[in-house]
Length: 298
Ligand code: GDP
Image (cartoon, rainbow, N blue to C red):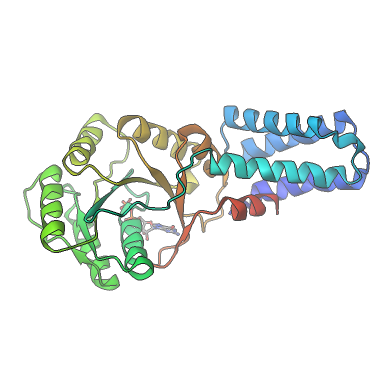
């Protein structure tokens, strides 16, 4: 993850550390390179610009030119600022709200982003780490194979799935999931909505209907972290229309550019809660800004 950005930034900072004293011009040149590195890592332009501006004002304020190890000081400022952006200013630090059983979790996103896999990974995590009884339901009425996929994953991880009934609308399946969750004494029920290849009105209206009958405690957008700026646009769209509570970035085990994480947080204001790191059911980790920032800097 983040190899490109990390390498690039390391190059920039190597130059800084080897120069000893820094002039304002040095800082400017370095920051220009940081900006290019961010853009190359698929961070959106306004986000990269704001980021560099924030670093510059902090660096200037701290009189970097007079510092003994100016390179290190700039690295620290960049590091802190990365964490700032990735963390956002939300005071809401709870990873998943699953109180008041049964707590509904709505999973949304485009087809192929990893929604069904992530639904099962999260269910497994809730079961194993928090001892929750979880019920999963597939609302993908267009692809019977997707419904079946969730059922198979459920069996694999030992988590119940809502029995499949053909011919029901997504909102009706959601209602049935809710009833079953109440009657069956489940702590959490997860709704794996249908994905489309692109965002359309029909998809959004359908997800809205599901949201309105269940009033989810969490609405998680699952997006492919390799799609960079597209992932950010998808997040913005879903957030504007449905209102999301967080993001899961998948395929972060790939060698894609990591800028999506940075832009995503800045643009939507919503936290990245988890990252997917593979196809296996355990390949899901909590998103930790410190570790990501560390990796970016190398
Ligand atoms: P959905 O259409 O959004 O429900 O997507 P799926 O859950 O069916 O996932 C599509 C493909 O991506 C499957 O082959 C998954 O195994 C794979 N996948 C999901 N998450 C990850 C991840 O974090 N890393 C990798 N390498 N593959 C993933």
